[in-house]
Amino acid sequence: MTKLQEEIRQRKPFARPADEALLSILRTATVLDHGMTEALRPHGITPTQYNVLRILRGAGGRGLCGREVAERLVSRVPDVSRLLDRMEEAGLLSKERDAGDRRHVAARITPKGRRVLTQATPALAAFGRGRAERLPSRALAVLVRNLEVIREVP
Image (tube, rainbow, N blue to C red):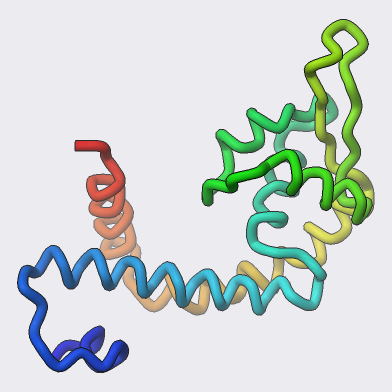
């Protein structure tokens, strides 16, 4: 019985190794998402909000429109506009309509958003290091390449 079978209490073997591998990826993603959520909870943000703050910090003063933020997110979000609205209400970002094109609304990280990002990063980094650094560098590089292959559209 494999470790994954024990974790999910599955008695029958997997039909194919690929089935077990894909389920293991999903299980791992869930464990990581839960840990990240817990690491960010004291800072009052979710992993997706943290991702948005990092994206906007990287965009600099020009900011990004909602579509550009959505394209850069690690996880797909069904309604980025609503996410940005909630973050604006929390004071983490500001939004401004372009005077030349009223349809374009640029989101920018606020000083409060920068503070939250700065305060939350050490806890999140420690969580990630605690998980990933248990593997040697070479194994991490192979893992990254293999996950890229799995994400490729056939």
